[in-house]
Image (cartoon, rainbow, N blue to C red):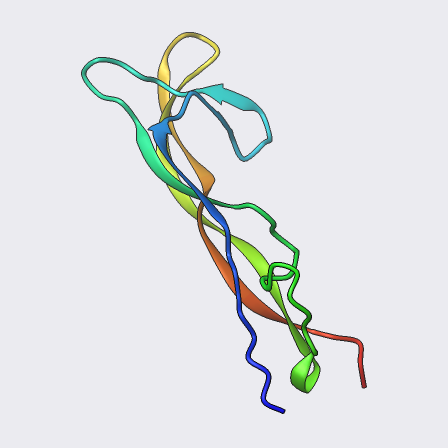
Length: 108
């Protein structure tokens, strides 16, 4: 019997101004927004990273693999406010894609 696997990746698309981001040290920084320039980024956020991509449909683990939803990130440059009310550009990792990858199962 030939079974077809139907894969689902639910992604939330956001194209809004950012107001806070975490820097490489894990500290929240305020993103500079002004009438002269609004910093907008297209974010794609997986609704279920680390879970199966099959949306509840049974996976058979064909050839020792199952699907897994994986969040992908891209490094972006953003202008933020420093503690002394000056601005600086920092690089942050933003969620920009969601993919369905294969994960090896423990079945031998």
